[in-house]
Image (cartoon, rainbow, N blue to C red; front, side):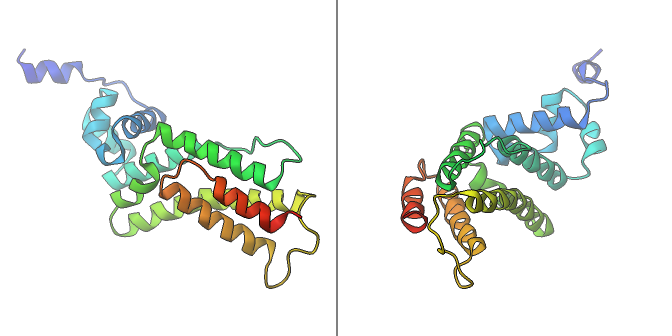
Length: 196
């Protein structure tokens, strides 16, 4: 048996699940960054044939898209874990810490992921990212509306709660993209605006 035959014989021929492939993708993104993610790297990491990866993902963009979504899911989780009665500013600080923790596990993810796509895939990746932030925005709005310490009659037709959460979220995303380590200035500004 020559070296090539031996290598091929050692490849894991057992069916690897899509979940296992995505776990390998997340490990690669965590260790080497999103730019290092490709079909061959994943096949090698899973110890499977390259064709096995193509069974689940028809292209590199499809693989990266699924990996990006899996990383976002890993960072945000599925359900809110915030205590009832949390103030709006406490919530924003908690979300920032949660996402910053994710950026430690997946360095440069916020700034790099949308650059690894072409054409329609880039737009789809952006939609996935904003989908996760939209769920944060919905939760932000609910928590803002439930925060009894907010100034009475603060919001109006020209300055609605929805407009305010949009403004806060835009600044919040900006801090993450700029890789700021703290959201203290944003929180201080929010306090001055919404609390007496």
